[in-house]
Length: 477
Image 1 (cartoon, rainbow, N blue to C red):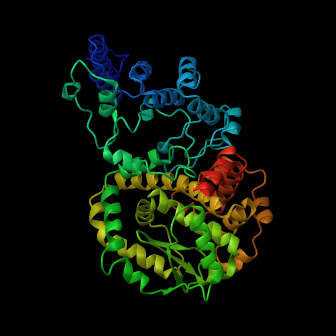
Image 2 (cartoon, helix red, strand yellow; image 1 turned 45 degrees about the horizontal axis):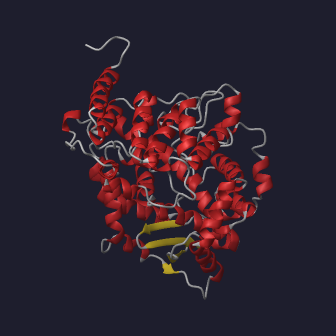
Image 3 (tube, rainbow, N blue to C red; image 1 turned 180 degrees about the horizontal axis):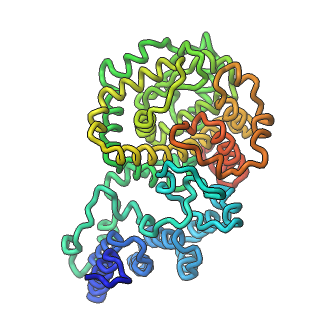
């Protein structure tokens, strides 16, 4: 029986860590490293193992892996001076980034929370898995105080689909291990490499960790797979597209020009455009491969060409990140009310529901509730990242923020009356953390409260060196 003061997971990790040190004493580096990684699978909060593992990586000349471990350590304990010193020595850019995230975190409002006695800066998707309203002064849904330390476990060390395998199952590696052999052993799996696709110029820190947690829920992979299949399946999504007409440059030159500008600046091909004769002002992304989007006649009358460029950049961002099918799964599973006039959006949702329903039919109410909360929390972050992609497309912060404000209006007529100044004046003095805490039944892409939060976030990001560097990189490609 485990000691009352030591958890079963820590006791198991200590046993495996002892094997790691024993293997290292015999000169079997790769074996030792794999044991240490196994110990972290048992208890990701075991910081002594992370320090030891980072030192072994340095010993093998794999400083990239060592840097990653030190950054995980500092997320859990930003006061670990030993980790700071080692990181600054082996990876000065990584150390600078880590300091920036602690001193100027992604969310500019963390500093306000810390001044009020809040906790650390690291994000946790679990913070948003409750239907309860936040208490006074509570952090934003993805700025959780007191995150459980075992959630810091690296996704390149263990995925949710892997079991906590026994250390004895580690493949034997000979005593004469070279650094090259060691790095091959430690390389990420193929599925992990594919998940770490580029587009991090606009993605928020750890977006992909949240994405993986969403994909690791019980029914999500099946739902996402069905949606991706329906993109290319004959008579599936094409049935919805048949209800539209192609949007052509001869009739809507500004919309086509906005789309081409957004695609060019984000380094991709323009999507196929369709015209939807609806009074709603929200675009509809039908599929990601090949990309197809619908613009309503109302939104074409409402938004300027520059605002449309921002909107199209927002639509392209999740596609380029590989998120679209998972976002469509969130829409399907949360089933938020759609405007009566959004006939095509309803038709697309029904199409997905018809084939994906078998994956959710046997879920318990508790499991379904958790799926909804996880999906909602991830979408909140994706909306912020999409705003960044939109800004990189239009390159004008006032235009971007104006488009966000107007997109929260319930109709084209109401949107025509919205100005950025009037919109933000309505939120003057309000607690920004409460603006971020939108309930699951509210869509963060159209919520007025979350729109105000998005504007504050985007204005902050537009003033950072990171934004300027992203612009330069896109312009040079």
